[in-house]
Length: 499
Image 1 (tube, rainbow, N blue to C red):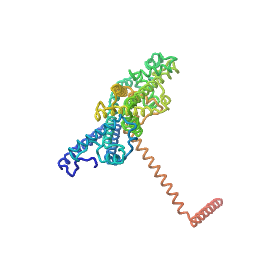
Image 2 (image 1 turned 135 degrees about the vertical axis):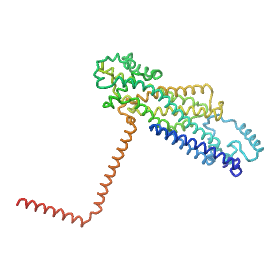
Image 3 (image 1 turned 60 degrees about the vertical axis):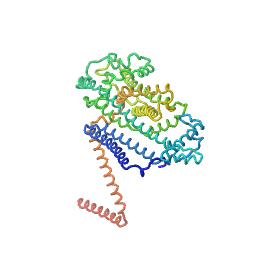
Image 4 (image 1 turned 180 degrees about the horizontal axis):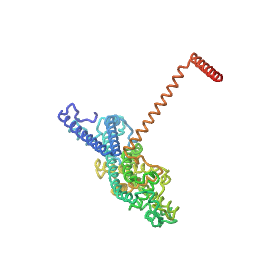
């Protein structure tokens, strides 16, 4: 290595063995912990959470590969030289004056002379830096900067996985509270057709219409959005909302099973979506690169970018609340009174671009961007200190932290529960509607049918190819003779019958 320092040739063997032992023990402990958690999840039939754990392992493997690349190629990267003029543009911090840099470099060289050549202070005094300075240029990225970037990527991934897990944990805790509403609806609904044959009920007397439609009147287009915006902050989902949406889902997708456990279906859906949210997709890495590009001194990018997840969160929450209001509006516009319980009609038309899955994509982006903001803050704080120029002024730091905490709280206790129930109001249902054993049976049946079809098609194609290969003039003549003799035989038979 070119950084200097004592090599393994002159390092005590007990030190090498001790450090390797500590690293191996820590790695094996983490691996065994993840393995044990996976066994517990499989034992409890928590397949979605087990798949989410596998996704986390994939992210850790990706981080390990990134670490390997940065470690192996750090000297090669540091020896890529660019001009000083190009290196002085788009800096996160103001560069010190050249005179100050020269004085600092002088004192560093004097200080290092007291300790010989056995150690270097910073990457500026490394061989790679000297390699570029000999050409009158500077290194494109010093080894110190590469090391800091390495740490930042690791912190980002850890914070993202942790925050996603906390969001799912707290959001799932609120969804579990709906279990009592499910039990209440199940007890009052022993036989769905019998329930529907009850007396007529005026819509104005129904709690769902009272909470979602009354008072809007002709100003529905404007007041509906205004009401939905504030509704996401208090009582985002009420008992009347739950029971009405539950009945609408059952009547649309499970009419033959009125005792369908809607709450268990919601929990399975939440666990299945956790696997998709916890990962870091390629477009999220593009966001990281874009932010690092625009983190220029004086632009305060780290401050303005905090409003992106904040605005997206408010937009998603308002849209989900407005979908419930739309369902109430459709029923209120068509009917004055209904027989039995109120039934809404789920449809993809209520969602952006008729695709309910867009909501999950936006929640994924919101959680990652918020994790990125907080991870960047803690990384700068621990790496460079609170007074670092990258950290910025206090008047920019405090709003960022407040917005980050607000996003985490609202997404956990309001937006995520809203997503879980409202996205079931689409035209189709999710595969989580089936229990694990039923889902496995259907998947196995589909694979077996596909395999049989493939085998049958292959056998048919091979027989056709064999016939084409065996076709020859002699065989064709024999075929013609066979056809002629068969015709003669049939004619003879017909003739004998006529006789």
